[in-house]
Amino acid sequence: MKYLKFFIFLCILTFTVSCGQQKRYIQYKVKKGETMSEIAEKLAMKTANLKRLNPDVNGEPKANTFLVVPQKNINNLKNIEKEIPEVEKDSLSEDLTLTEEEKNLLAIKEKYEVYEVKKGDTFFNLKQRFGRTREELLMLNPELAEGLKLGMLLKIKEIPVELIFSEGDFYDDYIDTDKDLKVALLLPFRTHKYQSDSILLKEIFASNAILVNIATDFYLGAEMAIDSLRSKGVDIELNVYDTGDRRANGVQSIISGGNLNKHDVIIGPLYLEEAKMIASNVSIPVVYPVYSGDQSSFLSSNIVKTSPEKKVFREELERYIIENFHKNDSLVYADSIVSQDDITRGGNIIIVSDQKSIQASKLMQSNLSFNTNAVVNILQPVEGYIEKSRFLELLKPNENNWVVIATADNVIVNDAINSLISLPEETSAKVFTFDKGRVYDKIDNRKLAKIGFTYISDDFVDATAENTKIFNKQYQKKNNALPSFYAAKGFDITYDILVRLASGKELSTTLDEGVSMRVESKFDYRNSNTVPENKGLFIVRYNKDLTLTRLK
Image (cartoon, rainbow, N blue to C red; front, side, top):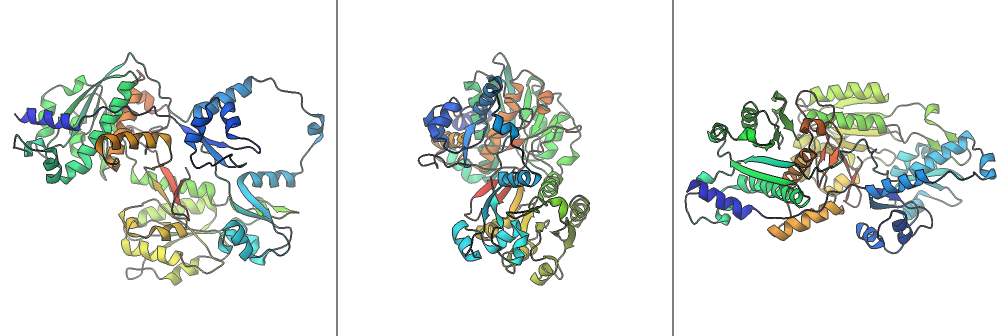
């Protein structure tokens, strides 16, 4: 009877949804005079499909704006262009040579929208025209500290960077339709708790919040991924095991059954000690689908860690700061350009820390000091809080000021945010964290948007992306609700692992072959040591209109 109830329970949950093919999309920069129909023809796609991917474009697109297009169409265009014989150069263009100053100016115009100051311009009318405050303009144009000057070229804002990866960076979802897969999914459904033969799914959900929020949602997402792959011709046999209560004998009983090694892969269980037990008793890959603070203790090479270690978040932010801290240092005038080599590399970086995060903060301080030449200070609370005056002592007017919040302490985080949203007129700061925990859920998003708050994340929801729309629509159709975080994780992890196995290669081989991006997650297992570990992360920034932009 126990197994019959479990079977009925799974039948209630199971549905067949075929999620659309996972495509990669990149940005296409519109050239002057191009129309939607011309762009669609150039990319060998239907105009209607191009408009569907860009519902925010009314009429014809403006020059230098960006359209979302399938990457494969861009690749096809590049291949065609390579095949076109090189035409004879215009004799005038052969004689045209640019001075170093003109080259520098062109390079800046590729990165920024610029404006030449005209007679009568003031900071007020510049704000009215471009929506940029004096502080924001000062960040990009430090020379404005001396006031507006006729003929000065101002950098207004950065032109969005095209998110294009080289073909070698991305994993190619190749499917060998002759490949059959046998998958074991181990989750804590805890069906032994439901004794009544007439128990309803609603009652099961009401009696166990963990089941609703994690196991069930993960299962529903995983089932969608399997149905999607089945629709692409992959023959998948799914066997679901109930691991029961934590620290009970549910996992040991499953191992004793002796059938796990007959599978191609095991996804789960959710508890770290159970994953270790499974991995030590099988020779096939065991995919650990959640994050644990102790996951660094995994030693078995057949375990796949799908969630990045917390130190990877810090390292990702360090790389971003090192690569971008001095990008706004060039001073631009109509008649001259002061290059980065002609100015003193400096600026200020403040790391807000507490005793718990001081070790990581000191390591970051050392790395950033060496690689940016900035003055890097660690700011710790006194008697539990940080006064605004202590920030003002370190933040310098008309200089590059970046603040990294390295602590998750509620009081310290709120002190920092409240201090940084109301700085003096000529002082501004960019604010970052590599540990965006629950404390930020309690902070008004308008405050985060005002300071352009930027953070590292292992998930990013792009509601305008085509694959997100398809996933949400089909999930909602079956469940009368939008997918939860765990449902999306269930889909992304299951699809990514199984599509790699469907190539016919060993999973370990495909994990080294490139980055993959699914509905909300990025997977990058390259350069792992003994245990395959995902290092796929996003860098996300709050915009003033409360939307989010993925910087990387």
